[in-house]
Length: 83
Image (cartoon, rainbow, N blue to C red; front, side, top):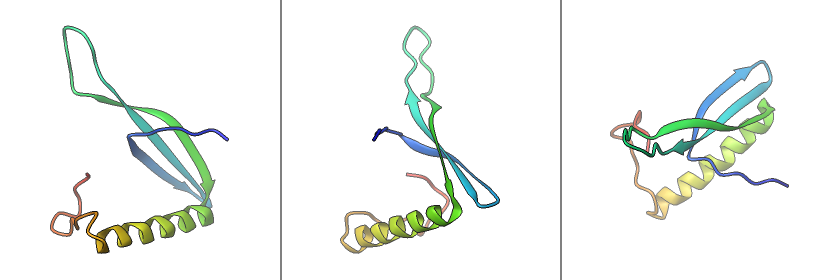
């Protein structure tokens, strides 16, 4: 089994019964011209829609528990923000 790290899920596409998730890592620019960190796609996960929905429901349950436990704070005032 392979493991990988991603800073963000940067793209999600649905085509028929298939979901394609693109994960990216931050590349820090080093040198005389430092710029904003750039996200580069590092891995792509393709899975059936049914599996994606099941995974989403599991993640939703975890987020709700973290909110209830006070580990996360609700971002309801600004639902479009990331982070």
